[in-house]
Image 1 (cartoon, rainbow, N blue to C red):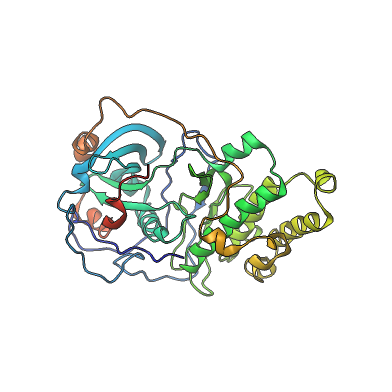
Image 2: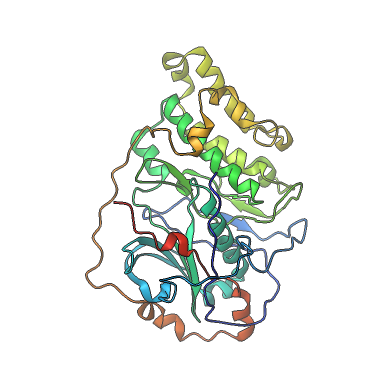
Amino acid sequence: MSPTPVMERADEDVIAQSKGPKNRRIGLDCSEEGKTPSIKTNIQKKEDLQEDPRGSGYSGVRPTTSSTSSHSIKERLLFHHKIGSGGFGKVLMAEDTLTRRQFAVKIISKRALLAAGEDEDVMVERRVLQLATGSPFLVHADFSFQTKGSLFLGMEYMRCGDFAKLLRKKGRLDITSARFYAAELVCGIQFLHSKGVIHRDLKPENILVADTGHIKIMDYGLALDNMHRDRTATSYAGTMGYMAPEMLDKKEYNAGVDWYSFGVILNDMLPSKSAYHRTLSDESSSGAKDIIKQLLQKDPVQRLGVNGNIREHQFFQRIDWVSVEALRMDPPYIPVPTKRNPSSHPLKLQNIEAAEARCSITPEDQARFRGFSFVNWETLNKTPAQ
């Protein structure tokens, strides 16, 4: 796994004293076609987890000057068409005028967040998007910043849609294709868990397909961070049909809920049971059926992923995990990116912010978003691959 690049803090537009966090959520749909609704009930966590006020992606390295860092990312962006929308804002395609790289920029209204009492979840999402730079199987952010009225998250722009769209187009996959996508998801999920993050809303709509055919997990709006070791939570969150039994029963849970969701997704990929013996060897058939059985285990303590090494399961016996991690395995399908020309009348930041800037927010409320901004100059200043 490649090391996480050194991050720099961007200058905050709002300087105030920090207040205590809340355990709530921020939801915003980044897909063009919409998603199955995610839900959350605000139930107190078992433990009051302490957070590093500098954010989970803090590198311990002081910000350094850059040949281009004097040009604020705010000044470099031009905003084009809308990619998605949600209750707290929208997602626009934006272009960096210096490098010509394109981003999906999530723009979130502070006023709407505060009115819903869901300001802390966007801070969790920002932290996860920053640390996600360390895995090629996670959608990450290269920058975030704030103005008086809005929060901005600059994420990778992926033009090929989500995994749900791929499954609708391809139908159930052959065993080799399913194994490939499952292996990449395992890498992404294990990276999150190694950082103390539980996703809690894994589903095909929250998996994006890259131009290269590889896949990436996205949408950390329901994620919990600082969930290391044996810490558990009881808050109710996720999407019906993908939620683990312990979540539905409102019992204490941990990272096992993600492995249950993964089991449902894998089951959706694989051929129907009646097709197993027509198209698969007995070895492949038994491996596929057994991994589903172990992932959908009702007892989370016995569930594969929590109990045992999932990479060593028979289903993955033909997988070279070193090649998977290095993106050296050939994807079974190369998508055709959706082509859409940039707007002939792009907007600058001041045009986007004009409406929200008129909304009055108290200094105490502004303090809730302290530490939101960061810029990863190392990746931001790279020109897009030709």
